[in-house]
Amino acid sequence: DLLPVVDCAMAPMAFTVHPALGINSMAEYFESVKKDPKRGSIGVPSPVSQSSLVIYQLGKQLNLPLQAVPYRGGSPLLADILGNQIPASGSILPDYLEMHRAGKLKVLAHASEKRSVLAPDIPTITEAGYPGYVAVTSFGLYAKAGIDMKIANDYAAMVTEALASAPVVEALHKMGLVPVGGTPAQFQAKVTADRVRWAPVIKESGIKMDA
Image 1 (cartoon, one colour):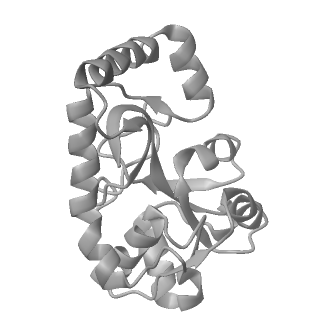
Image 2 (spheres, rainbow, N blue to C red; image 1 turned 30 degrees about the vertical axis):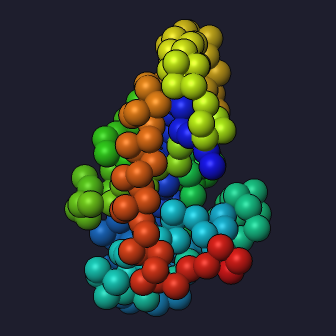
């Protein structure tokens, strides 16, 4: 029904803990879960988020009782992690970046292919010792299927040009987002790759849209 036109901006999923736990790495967090399974409760902004899938996979890979705890959005989750009401959380990096910089939260790692230009001090999950975990939320422009491809390509070119302008880059960075840009073919390939990547995990985990 929809045609991906251009990938506008991206934000990776991030693992975060309260500084009071005294945990400074993913490995330390997983060790703490072994000692106290209650620390395996990880808040997520919704039951169908990519974070839930990453948590499911990590729990299975490491044989740890990791459990995604769904919230009704990122704001109540942020309030609980700030209040040390839940041991850890998994949501997009922009939700935590400001608090991480202020020392109120500790982002342990994020699920990008490479370190973010917005947070070069934070390692990727792969760098933290757990390769293969890439979970990035894309904010993109779509059109109705059947649109003339010349129009789609023109839109993509204009948006990509705008995304390279200093004011737009600055505005997106303030929101914790990284501009992307590109062609409809590139965005379609990304959407398809995500579908192939996550479909079997969704099926195996039993996560439902109406959960």
